[in-house]
Amino acid sequence: MVALPTYACDTMTLRLTQAHAPLTRDVTVLDEFGSERHITIPAERALTVFVDNRELVTLMTLGAAPELLVLGYLRNQRLVDSVADIESVTVDWDVEAAAVKTRAGIERFDEKTARRVVTTGCGQGTVFGDLMSELDTIRLPGAHEPTARLSQEKLYGLLNAMRLQESTYKSSGSVHGCALFRQDELLTFVEDVGRHNAIDTIAGWMWQHDVDGGDKIFYTTGRLTSEMVIKSAQLGVPIVVSRSGITQMGYELALRLGLCLFGRATNKHFICYCGFERFDSQPEPAPLEPMERKR
Image (cartoon, rainbow, N blue to C red; front, side):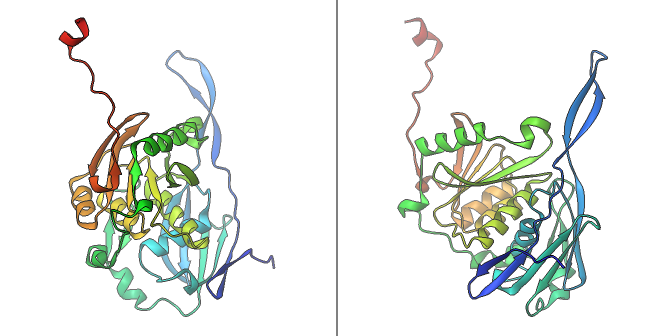
């Protein structure tokens, strides 16, 4: 039996496999000119998660970091309270399954997993329970703490780092990316077929490495729906930047939770939707009106 890599988690030890699978596949296509071309497309594979030998959910994933995806999924669904509650995560691509072994089982497992909500995630994701009822337990750092703020200059640096980041999206398209920053320093970057998988993998990475979110910034290529806003807040991250836009519920929840949200953020363009008190604005010069240009 192959020994699993181990990671220290408080006084416990977490064991994770390191399952690998190709992230892209080569295919032959025909373009609009009738020319045959060889391109790559992202992989997509099913991963069925079993917790203590009980089937929980099947995730459609790129497969870049499946163990962290499973870890983060359990965290963001609030099925486990601490990474120390998990003994191991074993992924086997031959059977497309992930086996999670907990230390003492999941309390009220049937109750927690009885209510399933189809989300707006790519491929129609599923969340368990009523996450809305637990929002008041989320605590983010104060808006005036230096580490919980972002300047316009640092925002530009963050966006430039994402522009330069090598990615499956650049070579093959059809995937979402998420990243965790400390100001404009990129800490980790994840891609998957859905933005929810990507943020769950970030959550798993933070748990694995005992990373606090209070001085971090979360970036996503996906839109800021209610689930994405909730998951960002559950990470303890006070500032979220998206290349896309926001929904009404996402906006209202961000206001309630005290998040600072940026959308439509590319190059030097962005919209700060809320949380202005966390943003140190350094406005660009306003464009000249037509008459002023003539002068």
